[in-house]
Image (cartoon, rainbow, N blue to C red):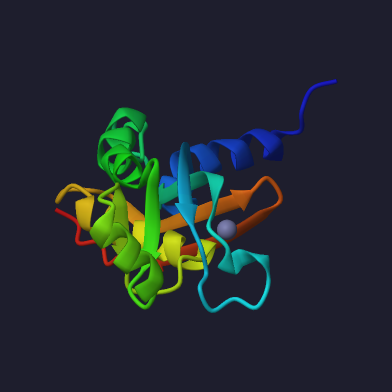
Amino acid sequence: MACPWWYHQRYRSLVRSPVSRSTIIAKEFRWEMGHRLPNHAGLCRNIHGHSYEAHVKLEGVPDASGMVMDYFDVKTMVQPLIDELDHCFLCDTTDVVMQAFFADNPMKVVVIDAPSTAENIAAWLLERIANRLPTNHAVTRLWVRVYETEKTYAEVSMTLNHVAS
Ligand SMILES: [Zn+2]
């Protein structure tokens, strides 16, 4: 059965007006990292680690090549941050016990000025990814979701003041 005339008109109008819709792309990253929450009342105060996963999402209007951003460029932008965290101990600045330990036993440590929760790791990544966006980017919104386990994640986002070139 043929589609009614309005179906084609509606479909064509959607295709022709990209400004009316947004497109989100995403890329996933994984790394291993140790941490602890020194002020946590439960098990999280102990030294332990997670297989972390970050989902980086970027929203924008695809350019003439049909891309919000080339996935290769997303990896170039994000992977150095993941490499910085991979197999490190993420140490809260208030954790004097661990800082004293690492002063005597040099290892890969990244210091974070907040408790090393999934929320703060996501914020750490979000801020740095936003600062690494190319100057001519067309991204209007950025999300970072950090999985601490398979079933638990924290997500942060920011709207970017995009100035059309
Ligand atoms: Zn943990």
